[in-house]
Image 1 (cartoon, rainbow, N blue to C red):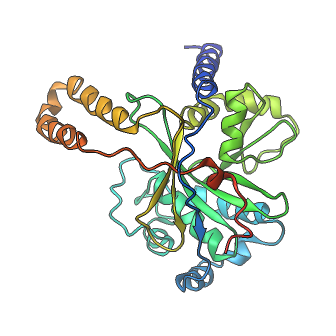
Image 2: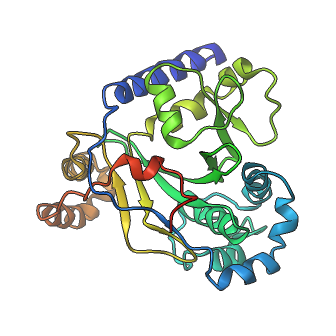
Length: 301
C-alpha cells in the first residue's frame, strides 16, 4: 500500500467516525454530580520531592507546566497494552515500577493516572478520562488526562501515551469536548506532539491523520473518576449520548467474541458465556450531565 493510499484510508476513517459524532451530539441530561479535586493528599508532598516535579514543570501557565510534565514523562514510560494492572494505581508505585524501565511497560490508563497525580501535586487541576468508541465490535479504547488552565479558563486534553494534544486552527489547545465538537462538525483540529512547531498546522494535520482518526473514533462517550486524588477511586461518572445503551454494546461485544473466537482459543468460550449471562443483570450506567464535565473547577468548594 502506498503512502497516498494510506492517507486516503485514514481520511475516510476520520470522515466515518466524525459522521458518527455528528449524529450523536446530544448527551443524556443525567444527574448533577460534580467532579472533585483533592490537592491535600499527603502523598503529593512525597511525589513532588522524590521526582522534583516543580523543577521539571518550570514556571508559566498551568498548560505550560503540565506540558513540561507530559514531555518529561511520556518518553520515559514504556507503553504496553498487555500490562495487567498489578501495580497499585497511583503515581508513586507506578513510577517506581516503570519510569525509565522499558522492561516494565504500563498501559494508557496508568500513564494518565501518573500525569493526573503529578499535576495535582503541583497545584494544577487534573483528571483522568476514559474515552470510548461507539462500535460494539471495537475492542479498543483509550485513556487520557485533562488539565484546567486558569489563564485560558478552559480544559485541555493531554495524551501521556503519545506526548501530544490537540489544537484548533489558531493553535489553541483543546479540551475533549472541544475536540469532539470540531470533529463532529468538520471543523479544524489536529493532534500535535508537545515538541512540534505550530507554524504549519495544515501540514501537521496531514502528518497526523492516523492519530486524528484514532482519537476521533474513541470520543463517543466518557468515563471520569468522580474524585481526582492520590490513588484509585471507586466511583466513576459516565457521560453518555442520548439513546445509547452501554449494556447492549457490552452484550453485542461478548457475542461477537464468542462467534469469532479463533479455533486455538475456543477454551475461553465458557468464560465468555458466563460473562454474557452476567450481563443480563447489568444495569445501565447512571448518567451525569455533560455540564459537570464542561464546567470550570476553580470555584468549586
